[in-house]
Length: 243
Image (tube, rainbow, N blue to C red; front, side, top):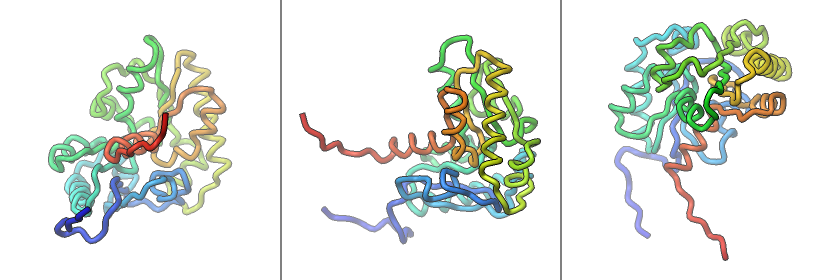
């Protein structure tokens, strides 16, 4: 086999590029921003100055900075680009159009898929970093047609979650955050008996997905679900079984 250099590329083998917020929190295994979450290599690129506060305010002035991060990842050889914030759906259309490669910036992009595979007249529960920021405009950008089929719970008032990921105190109390996330999911389930699946919008929530599933008995989708799906779409394995 003969290999050829790709001009401007100095390292190889990272199919998924991940655009990061400028956020300082303990990103534990299972989190989108922790490389050990994946059983394949990923490449990260931070957007300086794009804070949690700015993204929750739907700040479009960061568009060109996000685009620059995407361009750098593309130049470094990734095959598809995601992010570590569901609210980066704000920049989805522009990056997908301009980068001309698979771009899936938000976990919310899974919502139409989930709605289509679930029984009619059921709801999808969404746990989000901030329910006030998860507006109809954001959901529309994700391709959601039936907002009445959603039940949304925000974590912005949960003290341990807020301290770690909104106020960014630098400390994460895993067990307490897990309790807050699980209780929020169970509350959704109690209030909406027709919730039959849960989507964890925020990229810091996948580490708690198993606990949410154990507590609710429901299918749980998250950012890592989507990233793994896309990885296996752009990097296909040959199967070497037998019959």
